[in-house]
Image (tube, rainbow, N blue to C red; front, side):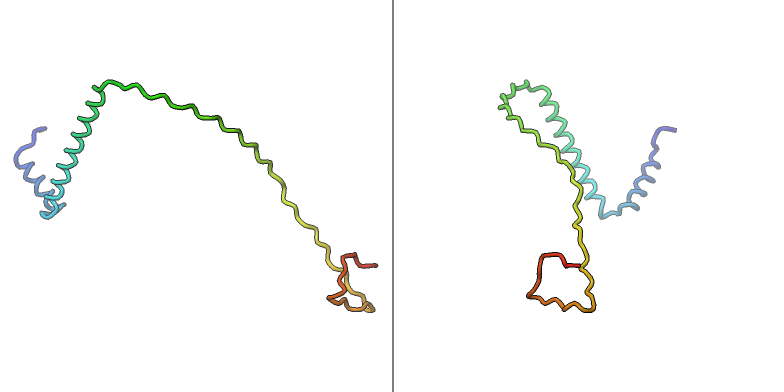
Length: 107
């Protein structure tokens, strides 16, 4: 039962034609051929690399050590304290823009 009979091949060919279409089969065959060619070339290069003598590597200049970076210490955010302006009393004169003072209001 493990052998492929001629009618198995015919059924397989018909299924492939239905799936890919007659227009795509030449492109598919070309792509497979190119892939096999590249695969064989790479295997040949790997075998040649294994057979080639190992060349002695050139000495590498030592790298100067880098100074360590000090750790960053997290600091809590500072929220400004805002005091609301003093409420105006009924008899107080209205403040003018030219007479602004940085002194706190007198109570």
